Length: 64
Image (cartoon, rainbow, N blue to C red):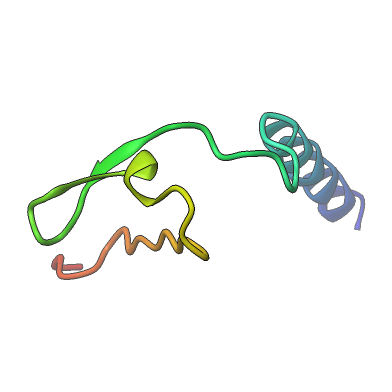
């Protein structure tokens, strides 16, 4: 039980440290990513639109 609590505490601290980098409601940093269509998509290209959804699938279309 003590090991489980320790593991959960470490996990909570790690999540809190990574969440401190970007607060909820803060503007997203500028970035660009290559899409599955081969095009480069930048966040700046979509400023003023209603919303942006960024989704990724680390193991999509890969064996194993």
